Length: 443
Image (cartoon, rainbow, N blue to C red; front, side, top):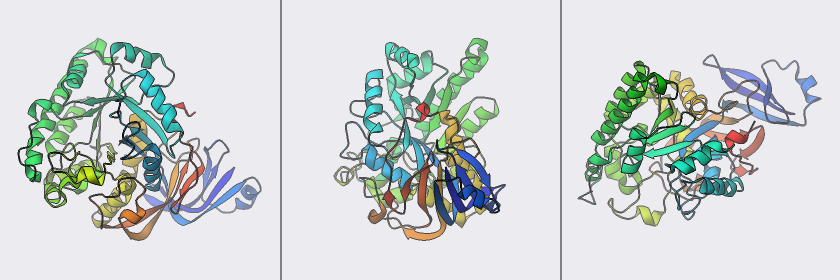
């Protein structure tokens, strides 16, 4: 057994001194405050980890990353991506299928699991792109299933599949909500505003309206009600989109939502200064959108925070706004960026922030015994120094993508250590254990 002692945990919106006892199979046995029983536990444990009075939080779960393996490992691979993840406090990531080749078959899915299992420091899940009917049947017969199907709604085939085909209730459908009919070619390759106009907010609004319409048709059909799939909108970017989704949820439609740090913290004005390093899909919007999405997050209208970690090379990002790929690499900085933001406004939002990074993503992905500090759950947690101030920059960056839109920012709070299933994986800049597993196979 392991004993993690001299820590502080969040209980009833307050920090309390605590100790945690972890079993040999990586689960939490006991969380206790009193130190009177420590001598007894010392005689039973094999290892003692001194928490140095740091804050212990449940490990974070990211529902949306692009670790680029297989096919584009010159940008990132599962080893470097997962290093950045654990240094940022993440214990589970769900990786997107837009690899080369695209992961849309059972064979490619199986090969990817085998490949990344040898490299990952974090537990992981994998999405697949829209498969054929035969491939979908193979997935459903398999013991190990994808964590969901990614719907790129701006692709005609994906939109048609979602709107018209029979969807399987056991699977999560994670949707990039932009209507391809409203996307236009960028005319001015030097203007960030021209880029955002080419992917207008109306594209997101239109896609969300179509998605809600499809879900509403299920609600009216008694047979379909019993077979409703799980629908998740990823990287929401607009105020109007959130209003539509909130109204739909009030009517009883089952939809979950995530938002990225860049859609909370950056906007068009930042994009005009940062250029291609702020280019992402959907684009950055306005300050008004930032504020409304933050409000939505802290009032429970948005369920989760996702990094949408999307690394590219400096050479690729040095091209024009027309040619440079979209994507921001930020998984290592998600928590300190948002912790710094709430400390400037309302620290009362801290528990909501933690749920959006841990408990809620576990629920969305259907992960049992993950995402919260409870007896019987896996001992996934991070030690966090809430007083440490540091500056984001290349020297602390473990991703292959060494440049981010946040470089030079001073942030408050730093992840010191990350435990996954009771094992210390990362501590003070050192990576100790590479034993990531496919998350749904862990019991």
